[in-house]
Image (cartoon, rainbow, N blue to C red; front, side, top):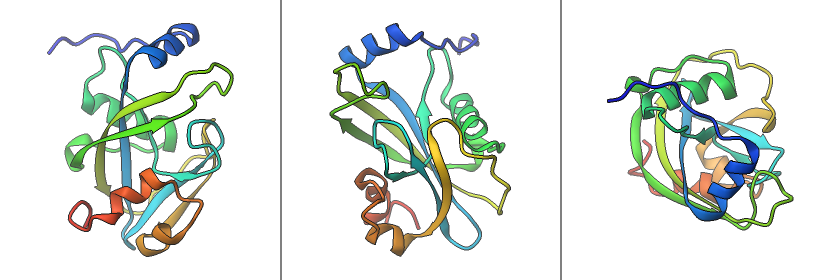
Length: 162
């Protein structure tokens, strides 16, 4: 593996990538000791105003383990070890919009979903993508109309997350 510093695209280049290619990303399905799942209320597109699992893009020259750990630190302020997570599978998410809410471009994510159990850890204040975080029982998140269907998909097939 080549060990390079991950490269973050500037705004203009990222929009071009979104217009022309799928985006590789990681979703973090975080479960506490009470079997609750952590969700964030999104304040930007895509999935604005929905509860969603934390996640983010994999950067150029960033390994999957490094991306997993960076996303946990950036979005939640906690250290999570990739090797303690279970890989759930590959999912595709399609949205008619993108994070800018101005540029007309749909977004297509290739999502590597990971499940990890943690002891209750203090979470930092929400990042620039989330209004707040909240722990949900699996049964209640499946019924909640404000939980995004892509998040619900992780729990609709019982063999995915036990």
